[in-house]
Amino acid sequence: MTARIAEAHRASRGNYGAPRVHAVLTRGGHRVGRRRVARLMREPGSRAVTADAAGAQRCPIRTRPPDRGCQYTSREFSLPASEFGIRLSVGRTGQCWDNALAESFFATLKNDLGADRRWPSRTAARAAVFEYVESWYNLRRLHSSLGYRSPVEYEAALAA
Figure 1: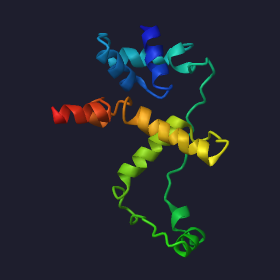
Figure 2: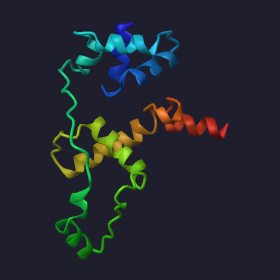
Figure 3: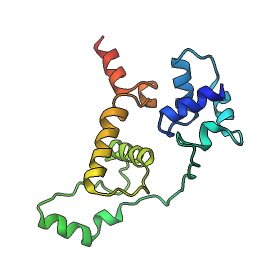
């Protein structure tokens, strides 16, 4: 079972946690509980989580203070934007749902692509984001809000 968990984790580019790995295994016809998957992924020395496809050690997730968006409402940011004719879209304080969908996507993008990763050029970064969205996020990534289905599978089920 550990080998199957490791393969599901590798296939997700090392981004899936226990709930999504469990969904992958269940979809593949394997009978296993989510708690067992989580326990096996947590075991010391488990190849399922501690290493990526190349066998390199993964970095721990760092926590950051909550983003209040002050950098986007600052004068240093808003003046150049207005000079270029860019209208800023910033929600009101306390209105967390204003940009929740976009913020959720960008948080997932940053987590999956690696927020601390350095790109050799803007073109390389754009190509990586395009590849991520078009070949992974929309086609294969399991979304918990869609019942652990990809957006393509979800839309196909709606159309049927």
